[in-house]
Image 1 (tube, rainbow, N blue to C red):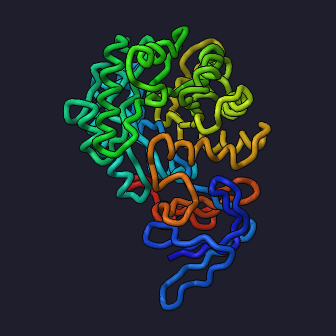
Image 2 (image 1 turned 135 degrees about the horizontal axis):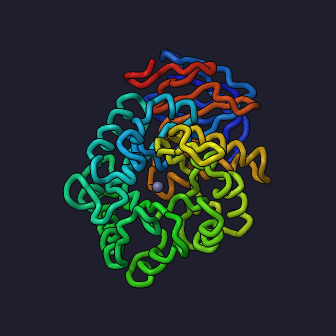
Image 3 (image 1 turned 90 degrees about the vertical axis):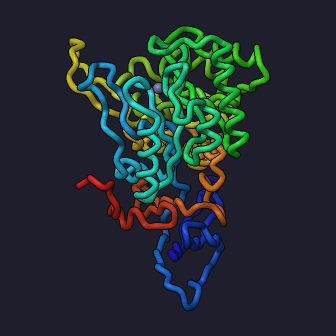
Length: 386
Ligand SMILES: [Zn+2]
């Protein structure tokens, strides 16, 4: 058991100074004063002056690697555990991406299992950019219903030159199967959509909903800040559907993309309900870095840390408070993806906690009740990390 004394708890709503007791992977109690239970081994951590927030959920990471669009040498490596811990991320949703041809959903699933063994929480989307989309059991619905880690389908590419350009009927069928798989498996069955650069990017989603019983909330379109015109459309789309902002690519394409923190603030100003907005990193996606002449200098890949930094920027640079900024990377994601044990500091939820100092440094962190960071020192690394 671990007892955190006197921290300022953000559930993400600010609930004030509390003692928080965790044990056996769960949050056991949150009270104004908790005495250490007698006869049990309890580690007491003085957390005066620290803010306790829920562990972040990064809902779009190419955990088993991605890229490859610049040839075989541009394939990106797998995500490492430290990339989550340095970002305060305790839960990740893995996905395949552009390369559903030579990479597999199976490898994403095994990587999620590996991360779980290393102490954090992980789920995945089945599928890839392509339609028909690769799966493990032959159908997205079967994967979602029967495989514990699969919570939805994606990322299916629309409005992009790398998309299979599914017809409206194909998109409806895939999404219906994801939805029914979700019903059978007790999961959200959401379809995560890669939004590309084509004009009128949300049109395929409006058409699918117009021609079926589906609702816009069955989709979670991502990269909604990739350029000005998709972002403008997202202000309307987001009033009815969910809108996901991508964080890791912004520094590489500042001339096109809307800075994620600014995008969040502007969506709220445009009256998109805050509960409809999420932010993910697109971690391990490939990010080419060009010099002034446009020559390829190096290949980089994105990291989950970008959602932490942009969450902080939403507080420091935009007119939003920590509670609001946190929702976009904690409770909203948990609600949309039906991760019922995640995203909130509440009694009975998983003990995924991050304690921050005034400068937003991660001082302590737990995942599933185990200390992962103590006094700013990372205690765990991935199996092959030095
Ligand atoms: Zn994408």
